[in-house]
Image (cartoon, rainbow over the protein chains, first blue to last red):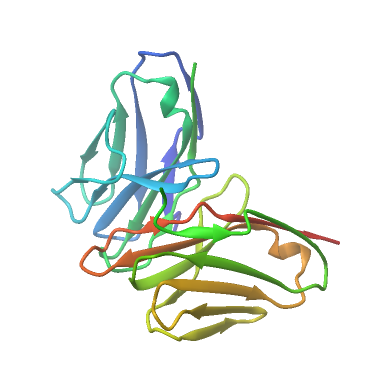
Length: 112
Length: 111
């Protein structure tokens, strides 16, 4: 089992470019999450999907969109990247919203 | 302003010494979790505490949840270089299952 996988591992974008971060889990989990991690800030929730077919905003959703493609996959899209979106992005999944979250290895994104 | 405040921000100790990391809030939590994160990887859950006053042990690591459910501590006895990493506390408040993370404590154990 791979657990939670994320692609790409690294990405450099210019301001205004768009991209999609991919996340997949093979644990048959119902809930999936996107976080960003910035120095001195801990992890902040961007969006989450409590179950297939639903998505909800987290603490810092502005500038992002998500798609729960199926039970396995949850993608995060930046439509027009800004330098403030330079961060490390983590995807996580859990059996349900009250259960332990398992994190992927992260995507390090730099916007110049 | 973060819901959970961790202290200290950085901690560097010699192998064999003990250390304590603190996680404090003015909010009451239904549960609190501790994670360890190594460079280039995602956080890995160490423990979940759910009862006020609860103490859990994981080998040389001892976790305590405050009686009022507003704070927690992580104590490592006889630290080893393998304990080096970023320690994060995270909690859920009642009626909201979303996790709120502290900023983390970077622990370095020197051989």
